[in-house]
Image (tube, rainbow, N blue to C red; front, side, top):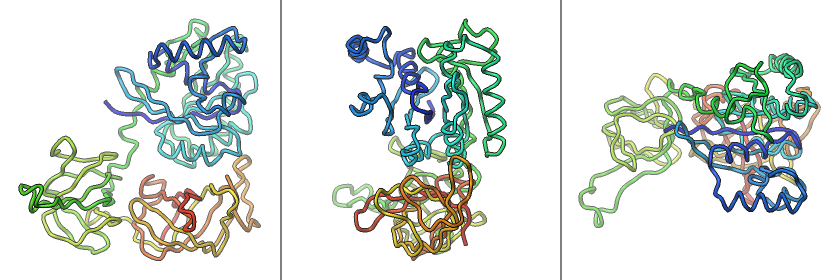
Length: 420
């Protein structure tokens, strides 16, 4: 059974947490005692209905303010598929949290309040999800019950958002009218909106095709760990040498000719092992151990690819960076660590080309630094070569994080635009 990772985003009070609570409740993914606790809290607050948002607003600060400020991950499953939800905050001051939640998502749900329509926040969320190359986008027009389930209002919002999305790289866009509070079109089709002919939200999540979203053309295998079992404890594995990691692109099979970077030496795959035993092929996002035909000096941070399909070997990188540090700025001459796949190197910020206003998409070329939650285009130089692809081609080999050497804290997330 495959796993769909999806992120939810919306402005304050658009009903994100209620929607997720409804999905968990209607798909029978919560325990009776959880439901009883939510019903009790709802009664204590004087709410006339069971406030399902309490299922997901786990942080006390969120419950007290009624907003989502951290990325809350929730898990549930139906007979068709497993799901991981990243409930991301909508406010501009939590841009970094949304970038974190959406960076690994296959799909993003952007909630819009049917009464308020497309807001500045809605446009920002759409821009961030397309910047992060989330392949599928669902615009859930919520609170349809408060506009009398009006088809005209839904069409108006759809037309306005479609016009804005034409400026973005939104490849797959779906619109669904819902009422998270009453369950309309969330798990089952709504009788209140007979004019809507599409599927319910859960049906769409269960059936959206994600297998072809990952890059299955360019073989990329960053080596995470070299496995050499201690012969004294496992004499039958005396000559075993395997290279463990997560497949970042392409399909690997025993017998395939592969190339090792940085050495440039070629060899063949003799076997592919997993926790459950050998397999005949490996593809993203599987974690496997490769056995190779030749004894090559391979270590963590190296990469295995095809001889005639190699990534860029680069030390000069242009990237879009979301700055995540509070109290520290990204500016030219900053020295940081870069972690790209399994390789870590020192990096110098050569130049800041512009800061991007995520609300208006305006490029401020006079900017001299990026501060918390700001996004801009920067040029970097690394102390050792990285094996990279453009982020648009491969989100794993095209993405990286920046680390502050002094604190070892993550201070930025980047998407490679160009490399040389």
